[in-house]
Length: 351
Image 1 (cartoon, helix red, strand yellow):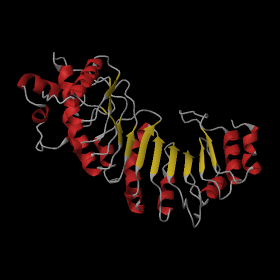
Image 2 (image 1 turned 30 degrees about the horizontal axis):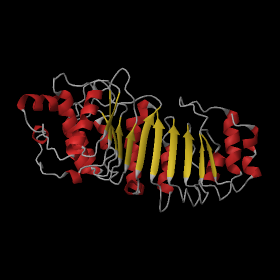
Image 3 (image 1 turned 90 degrees about the vertical axis):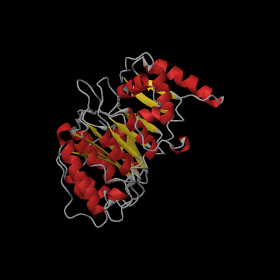
Image 4 (image 1 turned 60 degrees about the vertical axis):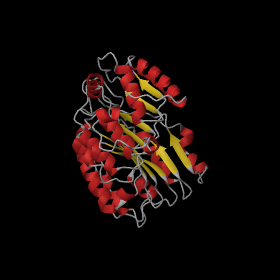
C-alpha cells in the first residue's frame, strides 16, 4: 500500500517529473489491492504535462489511463493489465513522447491496440511479462501489431519474461526476426526441471544473427543449465562475426562436439567449426570480454580446458573472464588468462 503522503504527492507538487516506486515488488502478479489502485490513479490524475516517468506496479483506473496517455512529456510508463478496457474514443494524441513501455499483462492483449494509435512513434524500448501459456500467442500478435504500425523499425530494446518460466522455441525466435534494429534482446526464462532452450539449434541462431546485426546484448534463457544444448560452439562464432557490437552474451551452448573434434582430429579451432570464412580478422569479431556459461557441463576430455580456452579466445579475442556455476570451468578461465598473457608477449598458439 502506498504511504498516505504519496496519495497527496501530485497535489502538493503538481509539476513533479518522475514517480517510481520499486519496493512494491510482487512478481507473482498479485496487484489486486484496491487501495493501491485508487492511490495510484489519484496520483496520476493530478499530474500535469511535466510528468516524464511513471513506474509504479499497480493497476490504474480507466480515467487515469485516459489522462496519462495524453501527457505530452511522458517518456517512461509501467502499464499493469488484467481486464483491459481501451479508452473509447481514443484521444487524438496517444503517448506522443513515450520511449520506454513496461507491461505486465495477465492474458488480455487488448492493450496492444494502443500501439497503432501512436502517431510518429518514438518508442524504442518495450518490456513485457505475461503468463507462460500466452507467450507464443502474445509474440504472434505483437509481431503483427508492430509491423502494422511501423514500430518494428524503430524498436531497439525488447525484453520478454513470464510469471512462470516458458520454453524459448524456434517459433518464438521467428516472431522476433522483423525487429532488425534491436540492440538488446532478452528472453528471460530460467531452467528448473527442464531446459527452456533445448528446442533451439544452430539454425535458429543463424536466422537471429542475420536479422539483428546491431545487437549489443543477447540473452536466451538464463542462466545456462546442465542439459546438453543443440546449439553448438559454431553458433558462438556466428554471433561474434555478425554482431560485432555485442558486449553481453548469455546463451546455452554445447561445447562437446568442438572438444571432440579438436581432441581426436587435431584440427585448429576454425577448421573444427567447418567455417567457410577462415580468414576473418579478430578485429572484425565482437567486443565481449565476459561470457556467462552457468552450469554448462565441461566435456570429459583430458584437454577440454585448454581446447575451450583457446577456442573461446579465437571466437572472442577480447575475452578476459568467464562467469560460471560449474567449478570445472575454473580451469578454463585460468588457462584463458595464461593464453592472453602469451598472446600479448607475442607467442603464437593454436589448438
